[in-house]
Image (cartoon, rainbow, N blue to C red; front, side):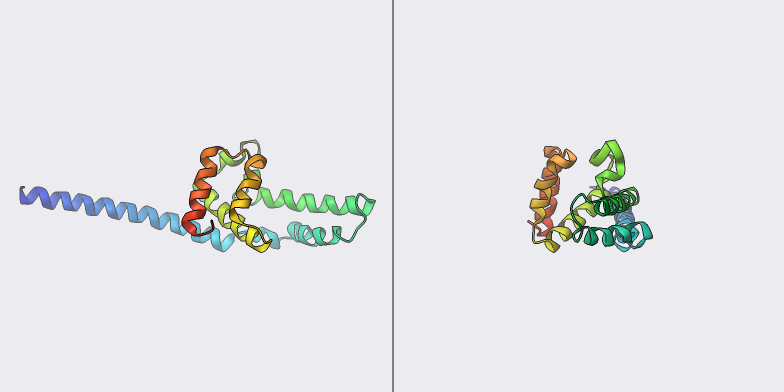
Length: 154
């Protein structure tokens, strides 16, 4: 083979690899930002009421006027949370999970796995529990399960 062609080919491969590496750096930067910012809205006044409201609801008589007022505060916090966090399918309204990016899905997977572990459940159970809730297609279910396996969560 012609030496000049080989050198040109090697340069093309190296340039492509640099472009791919730059794209990875952009994705990693985005994910690092998501990691740092994850659920920071929970520290807002609107969502702190959610956390306080949830525990306070446990102490109230179900369906009492006090319970209903507390539930209203909790719902406002939930609505605020979904509106400010794109890793929740509810963030996208009627589009739900179809409105999400792969980056949203990765953050959602990290969230589901952490929440499952914190509540004595598993990532796989989170997927199964949310199939109907979010209308997860078979393809999305498989992608989530493949991700869980690759991450050692399943």
